[in-house]
Image 1 (tube, helix red, strand yellow):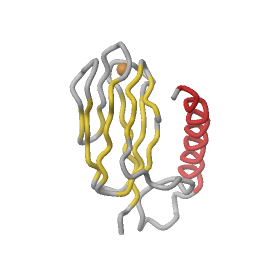
Image 2 (cartoon, helix red, strand yellow):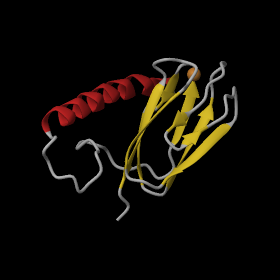
Image 3 (cartoon, rainbow, N blue to C red):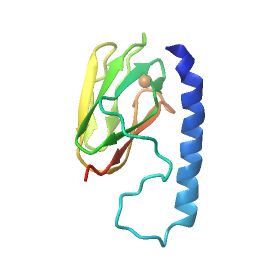
Length: 126
Ligand SMILES: [Cu+2]
């Protein structure tokens, strides 16, 4: 399972770079669709994010609107999941789930650990 960590980190950097490019260059573009990166992969049907010690794995997930994302605590320390419109308890084990109904970019953080963050990209279900 650990073997998958490094590629995801690289992918995260690429996504961050893409977001910056979009922010810099597309301010006058069409506004019909949500502000999502162009290079998102295919949506995941039943995403599970591991809440490990000071990192969410994977840090980015892509889902279709209406999909429930589930976080599973696997580390030893206490963490939480907090974003706009959703927040878990601070917990050391167990799970938290949230259904994302609105297309767009949904960043979230662990409020205990600066730099421990993730993003849920929600694409329209059409
Ligand atoms: Cu944390």
